[in-house]
Image 1 (tube, rainbow, N blue to C red):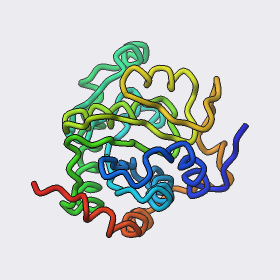
Image 2 (image 1 turned 30 degrees about the vertical axis):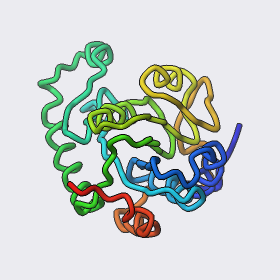
Image 3 (image 1 turned 180 degrees about the vertical axis):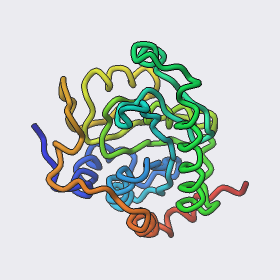
Length: 221
């Protein structure tokens, strides 16, 4: 089983599988905050690519917040695992307070992290990066978000994801790149020696490490 020292180490290793995109003017890295930013930053540095964020939010079951029954896209659309909702005896109405709370948190993060400096994705190759994929709910919401932006190609890149989730993602995008795909996964953290919860301040510092690259790709809109 592959193991990472921390997210920076995972990003450096993941960059080797993305070398074909080095210095390409049509490629943009999109990280999922918070952990995905720490993986994406060393990739941006190694491959000389612009880094932006794509914000989604997991919608956890009321009695088990870590159990994703859906996710919000960056546009605020809720995508549900209808089968799981039904098996838990939940309705969309039951989830309304959780959806509302998630929307507020997404708006806060967008305002804080992007500060209106979003990269124009039209005609670009978008590489979505996270520190690991568990259920696939948030990464699927990210894919749904950027498909509306006129991207030419979508790539998902993550250090680790369960094999079943990798297979479920392949029909949705052009390419899925990963370093480890176990048949079962207890937690993403089991693959890292150090896996602390990043703060907003840490995310902002990481994003500021690639400003000159990003500014070349800012949207005119």
